[in-house]
Length: 372
Ligand SMILES: Cc1cc2nc3c(=O)[nH]c(=O)nc-3n(C[C@H](O)[C@H](O)[C@H](O)COP(=O)(O)O)c2cc1C
Image (cartoon, rainbow, N blue to C red; front, side, top):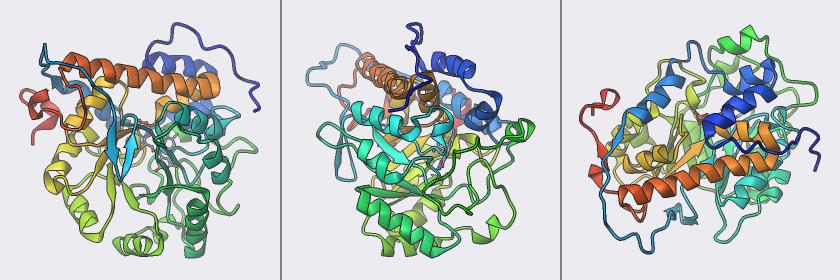
């Protein structure tokens, strides 16, 4: 592999925030505006974090932890732990190895991987780099419906052939969103970095090629039904925040839902995911597996997400920080830190397994951001 920018990882990176500070020094303003930026005033970006912070854990003590583990079941897969890598575009802008490094690291850490439609490496190459220990971790392809159905179909067919296990249809970004940071930095993709899996004329969705005409090709529920009927893979919707949309998804035969506001990158002032998650969980009960992302930075955040009804979480920007800091090793380190923290949080809360967490693990009283 090509690793000209890799340097040893400094020993003082002990958590994800340390990775962020270090990555800021390694990425230029252009890349930083894209990777760490958010929509408009960044209120949802911040709210995502605050909402996890405001939830407090109520531990039990002295229970037996014998046989404890982080394993979970999701869509028929046995997962080593519930931490997955969120789909993110253009990873070669963070490191020359880009998505290939992320795939290697995710596989090595037993983490599920979601690959973006706008990946800067070929989806077949990414799938090949994703080598996992048994039981195999999930490999999902994130799909933006393309204006041309033939293009969408060819992506689906390629993903199926390359061994992806599910399609993740992202529905919260029919337009890019008001990206002030990117506009201020006059963001542009560096030469040579493109969404290589799309026809070359196709405008990107997350971060460039904003507006003009995109809204005319936005997906609808009918497209969701079409996709379900077209592919043999399970269809997962990413970017739901309203309980009624989750109910609709369930009634149409969607296999899982990712509660997400795109990490605060699309609609600013959208509800924090930690607030939306329990409301959606109430609406659909156990009938629809839920995942969540947005602001997951600590093992305790993962535990809280699962206690609020998620089966698994996705992590976005921290993966980019790790990638920028040390390629595959950096991504693996970020994932390891989070999983280790999760294990520690489980033991300290008296929860030997994630399958059924106590409902009273989270204190719902006195938390401003999560009235139900
Ligand atoms: C740089 C970047 C690129 C992204 N690209 C995509 C994408 O191509 N498709 C998609 O569904 N979500 C995309 N997302 C959203 C993430 O999948 C995820 O929802 C979000 O980053 C989670 O929040 P977090 O970054 O706070 O962990 C992107 C996010 C970032 C930060």
